[in-house]
Image (cartoon, rainbow, N blue to C red; front, side, top):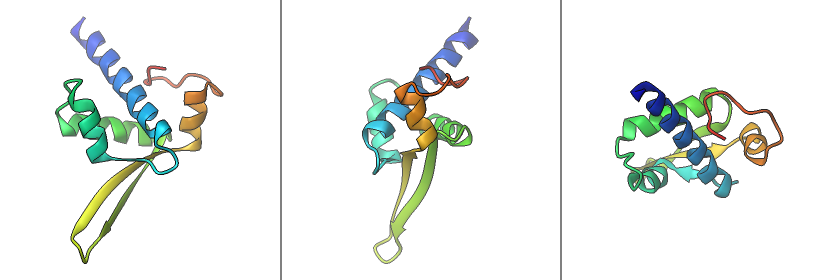
Length: 101
């Protein structure tokens, strides 16, 4: 039963990541913003959040872009929803396995 709950929690987290990116479109969300948003849900493990973003990127739902300024020693990872992700969030496509919509 624990595995089933873990799977459901991951699907919900993926949906919430998509929702935040959908609301932040077209700019996207930095990983820092996503980490802060999910810290209240008990998702304090940054590796888990990165795994779920990677999963969504593999499904074509988000794109991940590293931006920064070497001169100022700044670096950010930005997660943006793709057209396929927008279609999923708007209900214009069939449900994608592994994402709790």
